[in-house]
Image 1 (tube, rainbow, N blue to C red):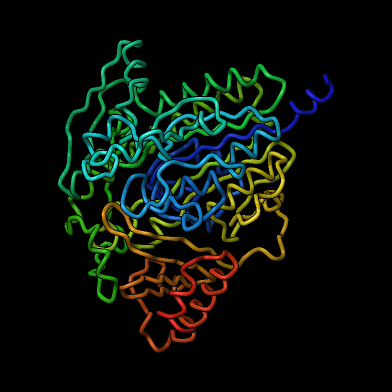
Image 2: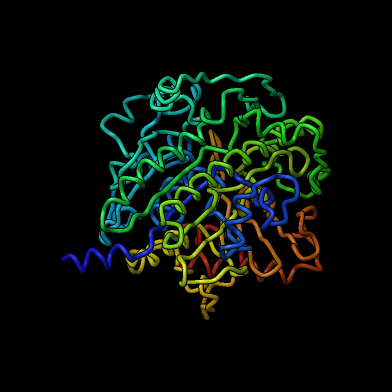
Length: 501
């Protein structure tokens, strides 16, 4: 038994770090030049950087449920944010296919802290989202509960969306114990609905991101006393709005010039009209303050990720820990003429996600990987890296673990799909497929989209009706049919009727 424990302790630890609503261009590894993230830049140098990673859905709950289940939203049923229109499942079901339940079979210690958004609404949301079903019909949630500790994790239960994480009783108690007060100044709004930015004058130790890393360290400290490896999932609420930036980090950007996005002047000609649901200001200067706060927020998160990595190094854990860093989806912040938030459009800024994977020492090598991978593949890869085997039958992901050793997977798919089902009170069916240099978007009830990303990387010109691209459009539709057939997408029958190929 002692020898088994020693063998188990040599298996790699796995640290999964996920941000919320992070653009790839916040990182130098993806061409970013303004946002400062030195600790993630260093991690990228030690990692395999995936250039074509895409979310299963550019909305929080669906993407996060895909991480836990290995399924696309049309299969796991959490197709929009929990307790909103269009979400068929409100609490993540506890099934054997869950990441946590599969990892339990490998005798890993399993930890979780931070944003969950897969069930059990938090009290702070009852006054903030009056249109949600659990507010108007509380009986819908009676007897229902699905939080991390309900599905096999040890750690912290933060139900619901969280609205930044600062409203939870546990965080407020943390501030009280340290004599800190949550103090916001210079609140800025007006670019889109109720979204806002603000400066946090509370010391860095009083930020939500500092608190989450403290929680992660506390849990990992407990795990490392055991003679078995750990899987720990650290989930930041940022840099999702509200864009709350500590003074220290906001000072880094106050005088930095923020030029317009290359596609900011897009007037929407030839684009789906539904994009206007998320139309914000059309004046660039209205976005600049929020982008400054967004970058500062990301720099604060980066600093705290660095603190966690330092902890791993100081305690002899870093070399034997596989680190996966990603985001649930991206962010818009004024792209294409002032679009805000996400969903309803499938542009690169919201569908493409950062993905860095640092192998354990001696098991892989840094580099770049061009293969198209998605959220469900992350699920499958974690299982593989932990020795848990293949995903459950019917799963939508495959392990890309061999790519970490620069190995080619001969039959790896040449395309990736992102699903959309709407948001808030609007149900809206979409499928985006990326293949080669093209992106095709099926918009049920609206204009389809086709972008030649080699010629038009900023997706300014929708060429779906351009005769020059007729063959490309047909090829992309056929590729989508093949993908839907393989993945048993229930939309296939209707798609064939609406878009005969």
